[in-house]
Structure formats: C-alpha cells, structure tokens
Image 1 (cartoon, rainbow, N blue to C red):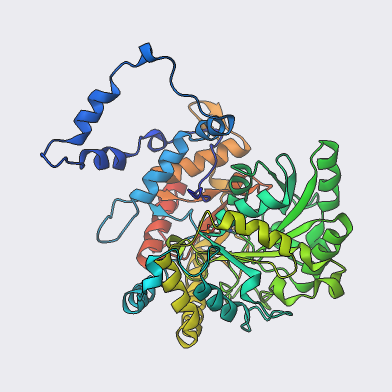
Image 2: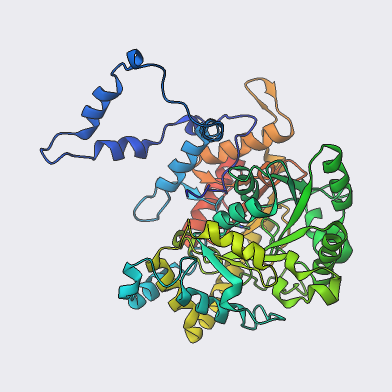
Amino acid sequence: MACAPACFPAPGPLCVSPFIATDPVWQEKAQASVQLPNGEAAKELVREEESRDFSHLGSPPKLSRRGQDHASKITPFWNTFDCMLNDGFHPDANEGGIVNMGIANNSLMEDELLEYMHNNFKIEAIDLTYGSSLFGSTRLFQALCTHYNSADFSPKVPVLPKHILTSPGCGPLLDQIFEHLADPGDGVLVAAPCYNGFEADLTTRSKVHCIPVHCPKDKGHGSEAFNFEGESALRGFEEAIKDSESKGIKITSIIVCNPNNPVGRCYDRGALLAYGRFAAKHGLHLVFDEIYALSTFPTKDVDKPQPFISALNIDWADESGLHPGYVHILSSASKDFGLNGFRVGTFVSQHNETLVGAMKMTCKLYMVSSPADALFSSLLLNQDYLQGFIKTNRLRLAEAYDFVRSWCLHHKIDYTPSNAGHFLLVDLSRFMPREIQGRELEGREAESALWAKALDEKVCITPGFNYHHPEAGTYRLTFSLKRPCLIEGLARLEKALGLPPWL
Ligand SMILES: Cc1ncc(COP(=O)(O)O)c(C=O)c1O
C-alpha cells in the first residue's frame, strides 16, 4: 500500500505560487530516459498510443466509488510534493533544490547510519523466502522486545513477541488499526494542533473522521504548550463528544501523540491518567503514537523538561480505572532512528487478543521487507551501539533546535518552546501578505500565501491550517537538517519574510 506523505499541506485556500502549478519536471525527465532494447525512445511510442481514439469501444473504464473518491483527491498539490521529494537541496549536488523544512526527516545521524548499514548488512537464506512468520519476522519481534523492555519504556508488564505486529510504517498501522476500532463514519478525537497525517491515514481507506479537539480557552500563539499537564490536557474533549454525537458521529477512540507532533512536548503522568479516566468513562480506545519516544532533548527554554513516559509504563487498570484492552501503542523506525525510508512500523497491544488477531489479517497483507527487517533488527540488538546513537542523536537535536531558536530570537520571532521531535512551531503571522493583486487576504488565505511565497524561494515550511492550529500564521519548521541545509533553509526563509540575513 502506498503510504500517504503526510507532511504536505492539504490544498490551501489560495494558491499564489507559480511553482505550485508546475507539473512534476522529474516525470518528464523520467519518461524521456526510458529506452527500448532497439534504441527507440519509449516515450514517443507511448505518446502515439495515448492519442489513439477508443471511443468506439464504449466509455472509459469506471472505478468503484472508493476508487473515484481517491482519484479525485490527487490534486496538483501532490505534484508539488513530488517535485520537492525529487528536487531536494544538497550543498554540492543540487544547490538549486528545495530545502524541505516541512517534512519531519532527521538527517542529523545520516553519516553514522549509512556507515552502520553498510557494515552490518547481513541477510540469510530465510530472508529470501516468506520468512519466519506471516505476521512479521520472529527476528524483528525479538529485537523489538529488547527495545520495548528497556529503561526508555519501562513497561509495567514485559513486552512479548505475541504483543507485537509490524507493517511498513506507522501510517499504514494507523490506517489498519482504525479499520478495526471504528466503522466508516465513526470519529476519533485528537488534541489540536495535531499531526496532519492522522487525517489522511484515517480517512483514506477506513473512512473514519479524525476530529481535532480545540481547548475553548486556548487562543494565541504558544498556548498549545499548556495542553500537556494533568486534567487540562482533556479540556474540550467532553464538549467534542457531545458535539460529535449531535452530528450523529460515534466516537470510538482517541489518538494521543506523545511526544507530540507538532508541539514537541511530552505529556506528564497526570495528563496520561486523565486520558485513561476519560477513556474509561466513555468506553474509548486510546491509541498512543509514540513515534518520537527517544527524540527528547535538553533545551535552554524548558527548565525541567517533562521526560517521555510510555503508555507501557502505566498500569491502566489500577491507575486510571481503564480496562487495559483499550490501550494500543504505535511507533516506527522512521523518526527516532532517522529511517523514514525503511518503512518499519510497530504495533503493541498487551491485553487485547481480538484486536491483535484482527490486525494480523491486515498486517499479513503489508509485511516489512526482509532487508529492512534485518538491518533494523541488527540496530536494535546492538545495544552498545544503539545507546551511543540515541545519545548523539539527542545532542544533535538539541544543537539544531538551539540554532533555530537563536535565529528566532535574533529576528524577534515568537516560537513555542519544545524539547522533543524534529520541529518547532513559529509565529510568522506578522509576515503574512495582507493583499494580493488588490484583493485583501485574511487568516488562512494569508497563511497559505506566505507558505507559497516561501516555496517560491525554494524552502518548504508547513502552515498551521495543516495541523488545525487555532491561529493563522503559525508554521512548523523542521530543524533536524544537516547544518549547511539548515543554514540555507533559514536564509531562504529570511528572503521570503523580507528579513536581513542573520549570518
Ligand atoms: C506523529 C506521526 N505519526 C506517524 C507518522 C508516519 O510515520 P511512518 O513514516 O512510520 O509512516 C509521522 C510522520 O511524520 C508522525 O509524525
């Protein structure tokens, strides 16, 4: 299954960048490069074929309603996304490429990872077969047990292979789990601002509504940082349930993204237990997305940073009165390990055999490829190396965060202090264009226009509407880029914002 790239803005209200309308240049190039064995250009033959008229054979083939729905969602914005992936900035190889500060991609450990992967790639005969299990691989399950039973997660109940399933990424697992926890038309609550991929992952196939919950009182940039402590984390949730019910939407679950994307904060124990009590009261599943579990770091901003507490570390029955069969944890190799491209996602559920059974049916359709499995398992099992890797990654995240923080302070740009993840939220509202071609812009339109302006300077940032941020003008900036790339990205952003250079 293709995983929807989730970091890219949904079609904005106003598209002003000529760049956005561009067809993917790479597609033209890729087509042109296909040569047939006789030296003919395949593109020319296909062009002739495409101009043939088949109307005498009836109308073009129809898709299912689902197929038509998906086809209608492939907008020009996806082309832009493709352009960005294909034309990434590189200080030597592609100076004119796009600096992508919109995707959560961690390249800070790239050199070490490449070295490790080159030196430790070892597959066995079984990797050439369907492997050791239809539902994943016993090698990876074993490696993941070592990972989850470590001090970073400190599980109350040890994690066993039978609690785990794998699939190509956390996105595909979100798609699968909500196919099993909700029926089409049901709803899932998530505190706003929230990771934009949840919507795509829940709606595309499972047809489940992803409902962002805004705290009624939280207005203004930076207020999102208060939603991580005790009962206050649940403000707005009771109203969201009532509101959904009044619209005929049955709420079945809550997603808790901890550490949080896009805010970059961890929930304290009180907040996690408040979620547990709320879930117990309403009979809801709690799906924890812990994809940034190991990406916490020290900062000058947060005095006593809240450490990450895994859902595995909580006795849900005793501490919050919630049947533990309602608690499920998702993660992947993508973020903490800088391995977005490996496509290895993990699902853990310790007290719900029925759900594990249901997930087996879909996970077997989407198995992790054995080379990725072998390499990721090797990394997880090499504890000495891994501990050093996690430590260095945290240090580099801290340095990169500090760099962007200094940039913000220099330009007097407000930002939401964070201590986890690969990004931070910045308030660029004062730079939003007020009008375009004589037309006044407001709110989200102005937000889109600034995003497009940045894209014209070949730097991608993500606008707040994508995260259901309550205030227009808040953008998410990824800082986990190698330094030359980060410097270039900030310099281009300065141009887009009309600011003098910092460096
Ligand atoms: C919070 C969160 N969950 C899930 C995903 C998807 O991750 P994966 O690459 O494992 O599909 C992302 C990717 O950005 C994310 O930030």
